[in-house]
Length: 345
Image 1 (tube, rainbow, N blue to C red):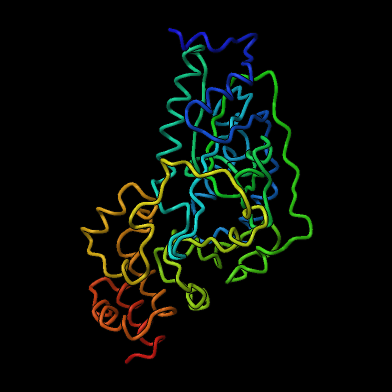
Image 2 (spheres, rainbow, N blue to C red):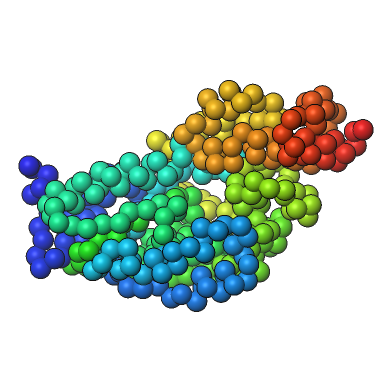
């Protein structure tokens, strides 16, 4: 019962300081509060109209819910935005940093479950809607509105203390708070390092990502064939791409450490040849609980083979030769392509 005394409601309003303290106590390092007013629909509608979503069909569904919190929580008054940092240390370029450890979806859901319990302990009638990026919400837009950071020219939320090395979730509440955070100003200025560094020129405009050209999209979400002009730019990358973050000035210098519970695992340190050689049983053992489960065993092997076509050599010929006869057509095609790229018959 002691926990229920941490909060006090008055006319449906919670103390913002107590809500923030509860979120921090549940393991979130970044916390922001914004009024639950509808978002501007134009950026999302225009992005979809241009075809920049590629085959991300989920982005075309539940658009009203993405833009207006009151659609998912009638009477919504507050959007609580939450962030968990991850390790940004030097690592092999094959695996994006966010994916090297435990799947961030699990980390956010575990902590949001605890946070919801804390909030409902003082107000059992409180209604909420919580989601990570698989739900109907625009986390980045809300993070900027709630003051966690600003949306950079690479389309990612950037915080002064954490750079862009963190993941987001949010919780919609049908209660107000006594103080909201101010929207964060955009601070990129004239800098365009991320735009110029993108290997595939995936930014048609600052802050706009064309998934059809994005290496992260193709190595994580695309289970079909990766276009020739995109695969030619993969380099050592097997899952995701950090280039636009690595060159960002806000990601340099002394940043806050990543959450130790998101520490890299064995698979996150593997290189393309090691990944291509994994058995399915080894993949299941190493990938379970990580974001790399998303592309599945054959997708990750396909990516690794394509990468070897760009960074590999004679030492990889035997492995690629074996995989060129793999029963999975996407893996066999990628291995055959890689053999041709490294000049092997």
